[in-house]
Image (spheres, one colour):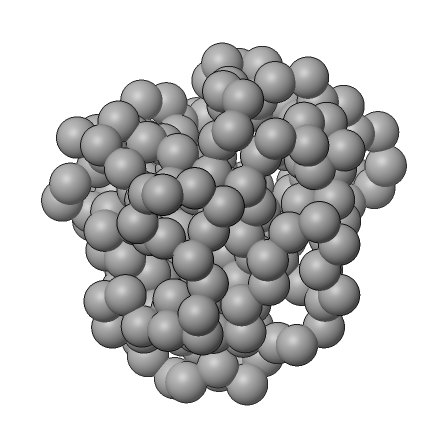
Length: 216
């Protein structure tokens, strides 16, 4: 999968670096789900890179005009397969929830906190990851990045986002059914994608941690 991104969005800068570090690849015709798709043109970039991809974006906000892909306005932490009740049937004969990859770019840390008008669920991040396991095909992979603070998990005072330590990443996000393949730590913006050794001290505003896992 050829991919370059040289602009300022930290999550997309981080994905660009993670693609090489983790060896992220997608075959022709891959079905890809991006959760929390409202703030970047990531799916348009994927579509231009390979028009055979079957791309779906989901966000609780209706801030996107889909161009060459399918948009679903849903809460990604909702129960089971309700996310697909809008009538999405995909471009192939596979079940609509069988994705080759699920990608979250600067998104998972927000789910369930209510900041963007989504239902408040303190475990919205974990519920989303449990859904990801259901939605991936066997052997499919998930990539996500979240803010990282090594000295303890916490929620920002304004309930905008969570900050994770290693234990919280393992317990809240790498849920049963996933096998972690890689974990890497990055400088924050404006240097997102600059890899560092595992931090031992907190940083203002925070570090990033990127995770690559496969459906076991």
